[in-house]
Length: 192
Image (cartoon, rainbow, N blue to C red; front, side, top):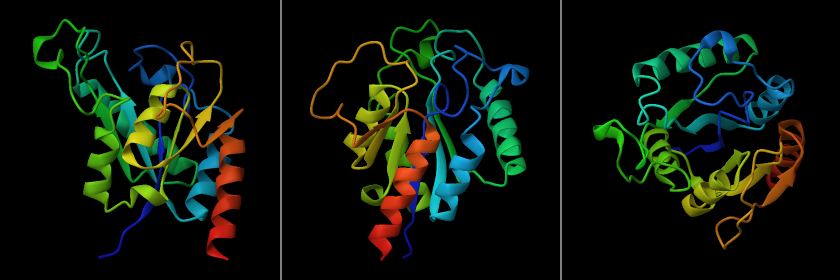
């Protein structure tokens, strides 16, 4: 059976500007380095998979079906940039939420690795050959727990800076472009 490697990407604060609880398609703004960075990942043979916590569902801020429109818009915009998204996975849960069916502890809410594990099973992804990229240490922890290498894109969104064995990234970079450059460079050396 063929397996793939992936770049798992956090959505808010990593790919798009961090607008809390946003499902308004008009307010979705990609960072300027997204197009070139994602093309580098794709050219290096990585599947692109979004993994995102979406606690606005559990908090009653928006309905889960709004995320389907967000996914469709992201896929459309990324296709326009010349890259395709292999998967879009989200966690609608939050134990502190107000909507009972979503206000639960789960294995999919980062820093738990559930979204990455689910994507790996469904898309035949080899986690140890993959990367998790995010803008906070919860993203790093989820990736490390899943067995990926990890990148913290330090856009100033991490506020806690609480480290443990799972919250230390393989790389810390300024932006997605730097992450893509380093990872594609490492990929070239691994193949050679």
